[in-house]
Length: 577
Image (cartoon, rainbow, N blue to C red; front, side):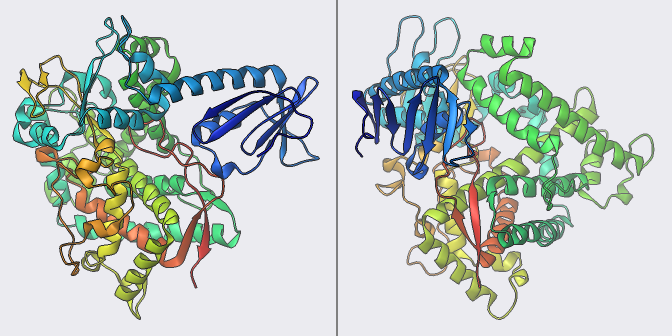
């Protein structure tokens, strides 16, 4: 691409696949032309589909005003643009040079400068480090911040900590400090409290009405919420954020399942719900607690600044929403909130009953119930919606695989309707199952786990740890390691999950290798429930539509403890005849 006529190139900086040309009157960046006009500049955007996410975010964040005469043109102040360009170019060149060599352990500051500069791509940054260090890397923080972290993606280490020597690797005080919003929920508890939470959750999943309630609940939400909305959007030829649709779907579904209350956020008008949106704010703040020194984020928390301010507000929203639902249910059973066992018929009633007179619960049992519900809501809303988002993104990049899954569904349905597929039939859809497993392998919703040993120990990799050690288990990186998944590890291959010979079976991978549902005693109890929900939603959409990502839309992981897409998933729906 040649510079515009009349422009004199002052300098050229090559950064990965992008070329920046700084010109006296005009400069451009692969598809973006910036013309200097007195005190303003015209920024014309085209061919954005080839932009990396960070560059598109930089352009979109500029203070831009639309020019009516030219819909492709925008205005912004010259001073701010030039300052932003110079800062961005400097950081970009520095990062590009730094990526090609190991991180530096600076005096006083340790490796914190590299970590902060790569915070926008923290999961890929960890993957780069782990590839250079045989799967385990000691990340040194500032000497004054207590931020040293041992990062690992080694399956032998994972198996050792999550299974073989499980008692020595509890969540620990550091985990509970970072994830304090989870209270005494199952994801945040250890020992006796964890046993109570796990026993309660297992009894919930084994409830006589659970499976029928689950299937009925999901099917009802698909037929009355999801498909009518998608039909309207498709008819109007609109683009939608499919990630937001999935988040609303799973939020409504888990609320209806756990709280006997459907907030109906998945409706034609897409109403705003503070609780549904609060999850995203909270999860972003939790990731930054892993990046920033504890003193920094605690200072932000104390003075109500930055991400911590949003996290505090989100906690208030969670409490208000859940306690309101509990009060509504308690009113049905009397003012004291006690439920007679012979009257329990729903899932919320079962939860309320299970905590009555429960030993091992200290403090407010109502708060304990709230913590339990919040943990289950996070599991039900965020992990499933995130997995579905990445699954449909990968299908859009691999239309031949989408066609194979659609044929598999059509063959299973036959002359009947897609609604005829029950839980039993879902297990026979091997290609669909393989596709979902691939999405979970490449983009695990819970991308990392935090551990601290109870006693001093030596990991199978030879790394010594003690009770003050912080260990990060990078599940995201595991799916990208050739020595774990082969040289084709970055390919989306549902066939990877076919049993030997490919005769209709699903291949089993050990949980310490495929960690999307955790491993060992803490293996996700809702694994089967998650697959049922994902398959029912995927079938309904694939059977009716071809999903196409909007041209130019950038897809990359966001800054969140849950591996959501930073800019959502903007798609168009093409009806299948």
